[in-house]
Image (tube, rainbow, N blue to C red; front, side, top):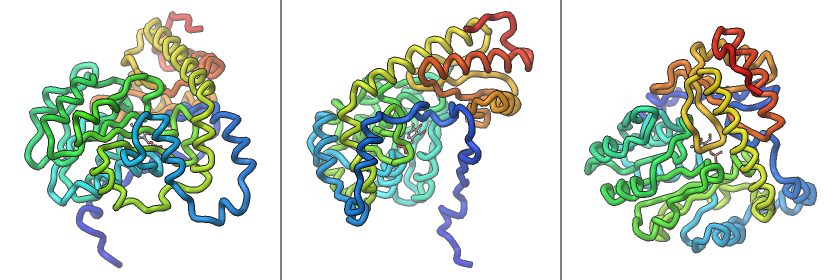
Length: 358
Ligand SMILES: Cc1ncc(COP(=O)(O)O)c(C=O)c1O
């Protein structure tokens, strides 16, 4: 039996619960209705030649760069944001460097940084999961080489301000600061413009969430052109597949679809917040397409919801999230079903009584 590297031997395995996801999937923060019909039309027109050839990323990078208002050398299309995190870890982390993350947050920062042999330094979120800017700044050292921040954060939905993020970038010029804007469309604010002032700043976006293309695996990483040239060296030239590359321009063209979906999610977010408030259930105001709520026994809650045909995610083992579940939001029809199931489930476990939810 071959012996994996030390960093890999000690790596925790991460198994998101992907099996048997039958029902209404409010468990992975995906688009709950799927992508624009124009993308499906494009898919149907794919021919054998497109599948036979190695995919060419650059022409689509030009389209995405224009959409984001950046120059093509500043941008790399990636196999989801996950690959962007992986590439940054491989590009900047030496064994025993420090990678700084706020907890709770998205799991893959820790995993890729650990796989590169880095030491993970965690900073706990503040009261009500507020972004701990001061605590984080205090933990920056000469060994800090990667700082990864999801903005909005998953699973809390909370945000850091642009000023806080720029301050961190300036305080840690020797570290790559990744601001992961996977939920950008639901929040509407970005630090992309700050890249001019902070050459160590990287911004990642995904097409897995609002765009409904999680299955295609496509995201984008933006950074200073010189840094991006280094990141590109680590990447496979064929990291994004031909199907994703064919579909992405069509997805970008249908902005009406995205705007309408985001408006529906925001409306659903308000409805769920109101319902949780009325039911006396603790939750945290979210800037993303999900809400974290404390329901007590998260595991039985998830099971009772599943029996009602709705999948939600148990987040109770995340730091500070005891008894919490994360619920993804979709359009109104899904929220109608969600609120009905939620009310019944909370009544069944003796919570949220007395409130009328619909
Ligand atoms: C903060 C954050 N970043 C990245 C991802 C993964 O994005 P992708 O599907 O583009 O790899 C997720 C998915 O849940 C996420 O919550």
